[in-house]
Amino acid sequence: MKLDAIALANKYGTPLYVYDFDYIENRYSTLKDAFAGKKSLINYAVKANSNLSVIQHLAKLGAGADCVSIGEVKRALAAGVDRYKIIFSGVGKRDDEIREALEKDILLLNLESEAEMKRVEMVAKELGKEARISIRVNPNIDPQTHPYISTGLHENKFGVEIDMAKRMYIYANKSEFLNPVGIHFHIGSQLTKLSPIRESAQIVADLVRSLKAIKIDIKFFDVGGGIGVVYDDEVTIKAEEYTQAIFDATKGLDLTLLCEPGRYMVANAGAFFTKVLYEKVNDGKRFVIVDGAMNDLLRPSLYNAYHKIEAVGLGTDTEKTEADVVGPVCESGDFFGKNVPLPALSHNDLLVIHSAGAYGFTMASNYNTRSKAAEVALEGGADRLIRQRETYEDQVRLELDYLK
Ligand code: LLP
Image (cartoon, rainbow, N blue to C red; front, side, top):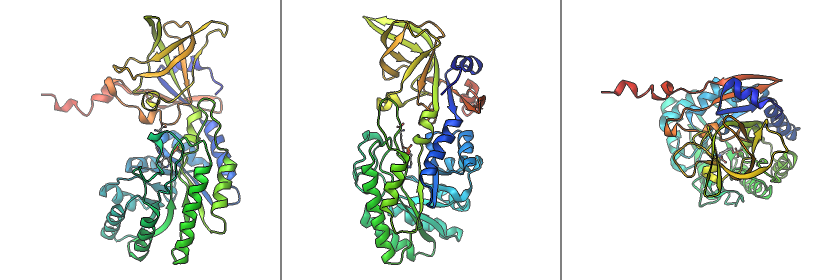
């Protein structure tokens, strides 16, 4: 990202999230172009970054949305995503969420259990509607990623096994209130190897073929999200290899191909800006204490995830020593990086934490009554605020009336 980080930090304050919208557009086009010649829809996984302006930016480019709560569905609609491009996934949808999704007439509900299918059928019946559904198949493939973001093994809570999926399709096909139009799998996130996706796509495409043989015609083939990005020195999946694997698996089938990338679209487009408060040395160990914390960007604390940290505006010739970059939250796990080589720093120097556009702000919390950061978009050389910095008043608004 080419930007004057210091000017932005001074204009909007820190901690701050900054997203490069031109980069997001580039990612969208790269992936969409790799589907050229096939019917396809990119359903941006809103959970990665659900800022309305980010969703709107992708919607204008033609993207749909993959949502996992009615809140995300509402965000997608508010941001201008066409309702027939919205998918509602997730293992635990409440009746009221199912009802609202059916009333809003979105593209489909992606189901993850037989019990859920029965609930959806019941709600659809109450509304006198036919629910378009897809079923999330768990292909029992090891995605070879971090265990917390691995979802495609039977030991994970997601989806249903092939035999169960088949039984569900047969049931749904007979039901007056269910219309099984799609099939889905998603085996994990930050995938850097193609083979697990290729194998899963083959398994699921074979299921589509066997359903076709019993006159159940699947129209939407959804390969989930998960394409990995470069945080450090990872070698990851190329868009054309990814789509080719899907084309190979679905050969001969007349399908609209869906995918649900989140991280791929936004991770590298975003950075988190934080300013140095203090430095200290404890028994020879150097700590840089900054104004951002784990409540703003949880990935290092939760997954031990690596994010490149860079001090900006300081000469490159200054000698670097290793430091832990930590926030003010009262947890030893509150860190952004360990043993990070950094120059000598002073109060108010700026650190940029890279590749923070996905699962950054969306996983932020108010822990320690810290207000959430502001968010800024960069587009065509201009910057603009896309979410105000939260205030203390915003945080306590829902509690104040109950003081006795
Ligand atoms: N579709 C489904 C059904 C998903 O569960 C997910 C992510 C996606 C699509 C988008 O996956 P992506 O393309 O972003 O990999 N908080 C974790 C990531 C959790 C991913 C959850 N599901 C992290 O910060 O690494």
